[in-house]
Image (cartoon, rainbow, N blue to C red; front, side, top):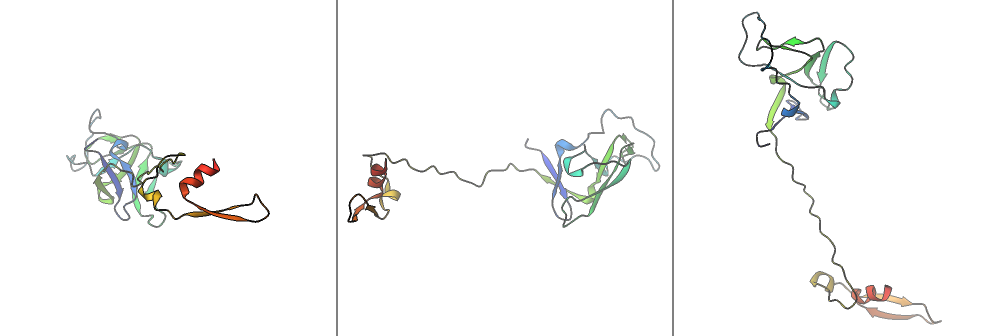
Length: 162
């Protein structure tokens, strides 16, 4: 999709999740009263459980960056749920504050590898420029008591070995 986004660790830029992993809690949720009144902005992004999170056996805990060199605290989880700053209740609450993640536009990935197929050489065919400039090879014939050495082109070598 053209508007897809990815979310990375603010400290090391390790990919954490994409917009497809986000739980949309702004619709179909009952709004609860909140001290100080609800905000129109959600300060936390809630996501579905992801593979890099591993098992989350406790009722609540913290998320650290999965990059071992970073390891910064990025979010928290509460299986019984939590109230968002917008006043909605989210169950389960696996959340990342906006302040700890960077939102980036997802780009399509184009392979950096260009596949080049080798040219087929058949007996009697002509060889294109790159192959025609190859040096000649020497083949040794061991059919007689004395070794005969003959110089042939790479095209002839293919023909003789077939």
